[in-house]
Length: 356
Image (cartoon, rainbow, N blue to C red):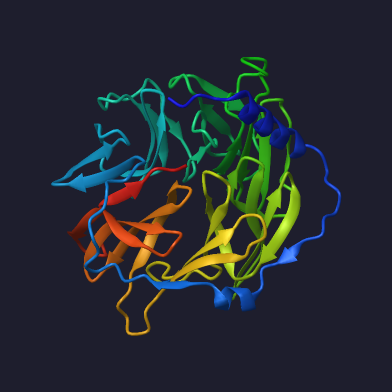
C-alpha cells in the first residue's frame, strides 16, 4: 500500500476546495496544428516487437475460459470472465463486471473471495492519484467510494442527473471527514447523460465548470469535452478549475503519474478502435509524440490506454488477428509487455488494464 504524504494531501485538498469556488477568467492556449505536425511520429505497427517486462500495473487475462487478475507484484486473483474494469484496493481489487448484463461493482479479496456487497453502476471506475480511493456511480446520480481500508464504503450526495452516472475522477486520498492529517475529505467527478458534476465529502454538489462531460482527471488537473458534433469533439484541460488550453484535435484521456503528459485520443471516434494516440504536455497541450497508423494498413488499433509510469504507456492492441499488451515509450519505443494472443476481433479482448 502506498504511503500518503502530507504534501499530497494538501494538494488534493486544494483541488477539492478550488472545485467549489468560481474561478476568475484565465488566458488559455489553443493547441496548434503546426506544432502537432512537427511532433515526432511513430507508426503503431506492433508486429515482431521485442518482449519486455510484464506490466508494472494490474491487468486481467482470460485463458481457457478462466480469467485472472495479475497483480503488479506477480500475484494472481481469479475473477469472473465478464470483468470490464478493475483497480487495486487494500489487499484485493475493486472489480466491475458487465458484458451483456448490467454493470456491477464489488470488492474481491486477493484469493478471489467476493465481498459482502455489490452495487449496480454505470460503466467505469475512478481512482485517486495515489490509488487510496476508488469511486463508482450509478442510477439517479448515486455515488460511492471504497477507500484504503479495502472494505470501507462511503455514500455521497447524488449528482442531479436522470439516468445513470459514470465516475471519472477523484481528488483526495481519504473520504472520511476529519480523519488523518489534515483530514480534508475528497471530491468525485461524475458524468450524467449530458453534464458533468462533482459531489464532495463536505456534502456539496455542483456542476463542473467549463465542460459538458469530464474525460480525465488527476490531482489539480481535469480535462473534458466542451462541445460535440458529427465531426468530432472539442476539449479543454483545466488546472484548479481554470482553463489552461483547448483543442479540437483530441479527446483527453489518462494523465501521467507525474502530471507531465496527458494522452490524446482522436476527437472523432469511429470504427473498431482508434489508430492514432497523441502524447501531449499537460501544461500547454503541445505534442510530445504521436503514435499513428500506416498508410499501407500495417498498423494496430488500441484500447485501454493507461500510463504505466511517467515515461511509458500500456495499451491493449489488435493487429492481424492478434491481441497484445504493448508498452509505448514517450521516446517512441515499443515492446510487448504481454505477448500476442491469436483471437477474433469479434470476441472481447483477452486483456484489460487497471484504471489509474
